[in-house]
Length: 561
Image (cartoon, rainbow, N blue to C red; front, side, top):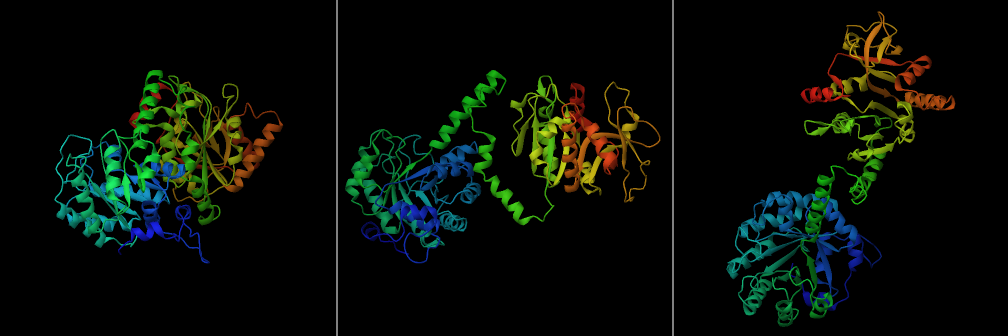
């Protein structure tokens, strides 16, 4: 489709830029969505100066959109840098394409991608443009240099492509677009390479004639003189884009008066993020603490907001069958190892808490609450809701559980924060019938002489050796002094409540509160009281878990994981 720039700048547009960004037509009786392709075309051709902000991944794209930018510049330099690579086509175009897909999924505003030289000749450009269109990328900018490219600000006198060969790349791009509004921007590097103004104008005219929708004129001088001379001599023959990275001190109004259509802020989200990450890393390394940085960085809740966790929760309510959702509450308020909260000790590259959360996630439990206390500033896991027991020194486990009372709804798993277990234990606990089910290690009956307090469990009958037994034993008693023939083993600190069981749990917590026992009661006391009023079933297994309570336990856990 041939686009008339003259019509774009003289006729009243059918769609306003603000309406295009929001995705609705501004006129006509039937409002309908406007494609990102059409939106980018208006951004690049509007008589009102437009701005594109650099982004290099889904998160930075969301931040740019949230800031109000009309379009995004997917920078080749910063996408490469985010991978730790040089801006020399070290990242393949398919790797860049994968990043672009995440970016396009993350935002509604259009994306103009820095396509470098097109990653080869006309044939590479054809395939690139088709794949970009399929992923909703609204346009591509290609530069008249040779593949593999070198960043424009490195060295002098970089070789340029033959004009006719580059025009072939432009024609190939336009012939391959799957949407008529897809934009091909031709980047002229003649001024960068020292070829002079006449050569820049000659190339720009050839690229315009070959079908480029817009010309990007590039300069690395600290003054805008080259750019302003080019715009004056160009005379609005087609839309014009600039990148004032080097001549940043020039007032933006100068470019408005010169007739520039769009400005790209080309690398500033990446550069600012590097500054912030360096400062944060240096501060934490020096302090060996998070105290100074915690209030200066964005909150985990803000990450959840940006990534739309609330939408997922709404979708779960809409699509998951009633009663199918479960949540976990991890009691991680008490004690530490070598000054660190026990739940945050490192076990072969992952914290104990992260290993627990991964186990819950593998079982389909994605709503996790953490009750913090000791060293709570260090307990900031991604993907969990946080509750604080600031009285962890003089209260017990039921008080911690009560701080999360708002989340004691539906099916709930409660876990100690210092327990490490194999995933099959969680699977077995979830599948055992019963409104309250506790996980009991049958090997626990042989321990207890190590000076620790163990929560031994007795059932209404000895556990059966028949693994097909359908009815598990009921809890009769739990505590350090439990003995006898009906001893089933040791409770490991993991219990499941069905929606009915959770209601019983809430009632028992309120009874303990009314009796003045809420501050001192531990989980075995709570389970004993529940067992006196309701069936509490035993899921019995053998071994494959650890209580990580001391430094020797931690060493053992690193062999266990």
